Length: 350
Image (cartoon, rainbow, N blue to C red; front, side, top):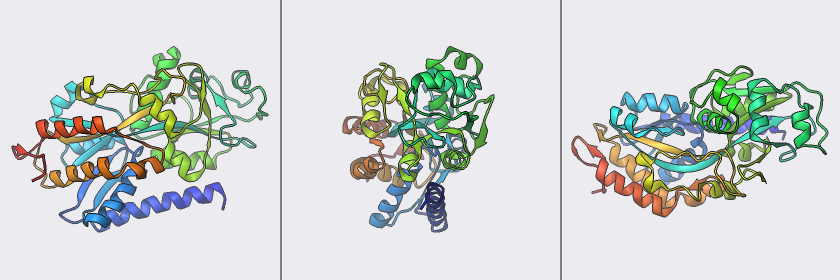
């Protein structure tokens, strides 16, 4: 079975699960929408939780921008975003947020003869590629980082996110930190104007487009890399060390995160210090109304509580980093202190 076929099967399976969850949705089911970054683990958790409780999750993997819009419009019980909202934005929109899972964004390539981990990149060179300043795989800037790799004289085809997404935010946030030119010309946001490249929707779309395009380079959440055996690049991190994308590298980047001091849990984990840290690491966040009118608010909180307590192994199997117990306890206190349903305390569960 070739890579393209594997990827298509994985994408179809994900779509089938979404359709099945939506098709069986009932008044008791939980509705959510947003980030594609955590979709693989949310789908896995949803399947297990449904089997245990009979309660389903109808999650629309539409990108962080769409998730923020839907929760602001109260069309879903919760939104999901990989770009945390700042405290002022939360207050303005009457929202509460908390981290649900941690993972990594990974450059993926389609270069003839190049296998996973063969290619080495640093942040400034990666930024130059997506600025359109480095246009061929045998460019001296890339050859300098890969002196023993036989790179072809092949045009680089950047693949970018066309939808507003937290994956975009994490990727552009990192590139803005390591490249003054990228910061000036593009900047960090969920949706940016890319000067070059092919646009694709969602992590799924970027993964699919990258595997279909010779010379392509894209960026996706690591679960998509792992599930479909994509060709990833190693990265030079903040401390100048080459690292591969894996759970322990994401854990290293998150190790010094002080969630207790982060107002509204606003914390960005890109370009963290540490010799083992993966440079494009980030958390995915849940957004809910501080005073919800949605009758399924408590059901959603029970699902998130279950995921914190019982979903660790499933998350680790997909190389996500579960939220530490100390942080989940902080989150539960946030639920108790800050969440209501029709003016009444939403948590703890009665």
